[in-house]
Length: 198
Image 1 (cartoon, rainbow, N blue to C red):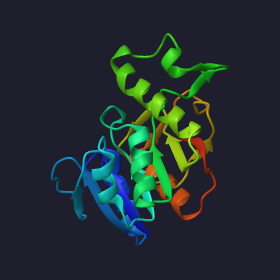
Image 2 (image 1 turned 180 degrees about the vertical axis):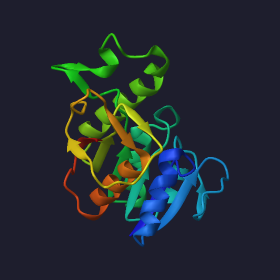
Image 3 (image 1 turned 135 degrees about the horizontal axis):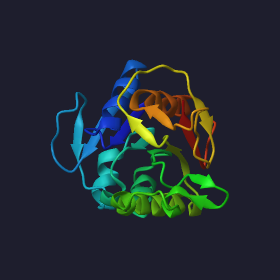
């Protein structure tokens, strides 16, 4: 497939590029400024629907791995509609997952305040997707999300934060990339958020 990728130069974006190209998909990175990502790049601002539509036209799907504070779901969805890009796959965050019944991590006492602006923007993004009629999927990683190995062995969940037997919540960028590209190739979570952890 032909895939456009917002956030191509980021840590998750680079793993998505490796996973996508490794499976034979053609990837175009989308960024505000020129960046070296190993794939063709198009310059567009994710807050400008017309510019973004021009950059993503001709693609089968758009991956969103960018900072939520630098984009807006309404603008992204408008751009997709203009460009006739049918699918959106989003790298979300763990902050909106539930840590107890009815309580998302962002509203719990343990939530670190430094992350509130980005997680709040991610929550708004997810809510906008849920209110739309677009074909979207939002993947929330585990609490500890960082570089590691592509093991291919992990658990998938729904809206609750996944923890292992020791109470830890971990996943690598590499395994999240695998899970999201699996979703591209064999959709199982259309118009839904799902989560991932070891």
